[in-house]
Amino acid sequence: MGTFYIAAVSSDLLKDVTYSRATEINGMNLTGNQRGLDDDRVREITNYLETNNAAIPNSVILAVNYYEDDSLETEPTKAWSLIQNEEGLFIDIPDDKAKLAAIVDGQHRINGFLKSKTKMDIPCSIYFELPPSLQALVFATINFNQKKVDKSLAYQLFGYQLDESESDYWSPDIVAVKLSREFNLQEGSPFQNRIELVKKVKPKKEGEENNQPVEGWSISSACFIAGVTSLITGNAKADRYEIGKKKLLGNSSRLDLKPNEKYPLRFLLSKWKRPSYKNGSRKVFSEYE
Image 1 (tube, rainbow, N blue to C red):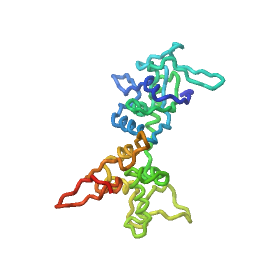
Image 2 (cartoon, rainbow, N blue to C red):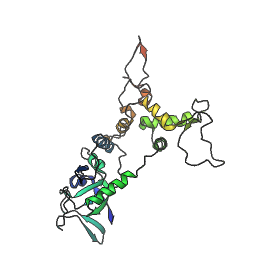
Image 3 (cartoon, rainbow, N blue to C red):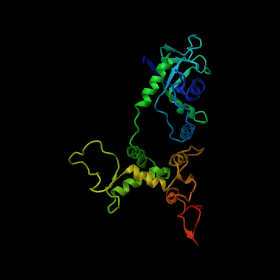
Image 4 (cartoon, helix red, strand yellow):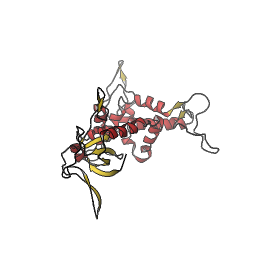
């Protein structure tokens, strides 16, 4: 594909100089190299950017010096270029309003900044004069070969926060991760040694700690965690973002979650009083313990 350069570019600048086009086919002619923009995904990224642990560590891929109509900018006073001096190698952008950077990969991340107050430098992999046909090839190659992470593994990786954060900042799915480990280890638990915390990829070696399920039935930790989470919330991601929001003084905690009597275990996470029944009806979660 040729040479590309890694650079840190501010999110504010990226909003002004980048563009993306959904793929369209007119007869035998194809234009654009992106899937359609998913508004829900953009909104989710925007919410994530407002949290105290927001980070965009993976690079956005740009192809520069092509306009949105696929025409190439060759005028030195307008085109992006490289400058090298005693301090290092830099990318020169003559016009910080001209949309000369096609997004090859990362359109949802950049669009997530449009309605966010968060500003940060974003790692970008930048190709110069990469034609639209090769832009499409890069996008297709990256996304065609992607494989989703096993859900059980992903949940347990989230569980690193169990040791590194106070319980007041655990989101519903983190609480469920904690319970999956406790129920799997607790003597006499109906799930003792029956929750496969992480899918095994190779046989256990002799002498290793036995975390394998006992003979008979077993379930994945993803199954257990999803079940427990569904008893706490209808939107674990939204709750996670709410707990992680930045405030003028400090950060939000699980006490900022709104009560909802539809979810019978929500009071455990949010520290509202246990719902009680009176004359056959349930009281609303409205008081703190």
